[in-house]
Length: 132
Image 1 (spheres, rainbow, N blue to C red):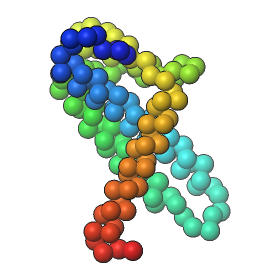
Image 2 (image 1 turned 135 degrees about the horizontal axis):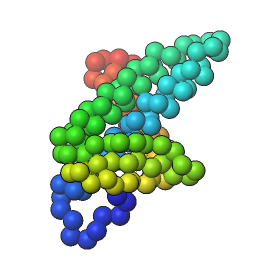
Image 3 (image 1 turned 45 degrees about the horizontal axis):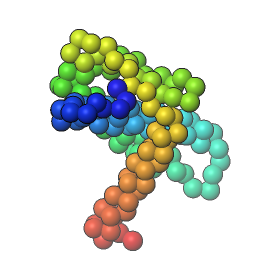
């Protein structure tokens, strides 16, 4: 699934893009859940838990929306797991099994970008509402 052949159609590219986004948001909300579990027992001056909970819910919703979009396009995610420095995803497209392989390092960097985007959008929304 990595490396699209030349001349492939736009719908295939769209499914590949959706799959990557789905994988990213799946990893993203799980990573936030792990961070939440780590922070819960700590005694901090301020509680960041509501922010992380909101972030996790947002990412999980997007993950499930993307998964539904993939299903509508005939793409079913069978398995997804970490294997060394890679993250492999087994999928079924129109009855055929395929495997997508992603670099963990790349996925981590992309998740970090999604976090930055979420923070910027929330800040802009607060400013639009008249917040500080």
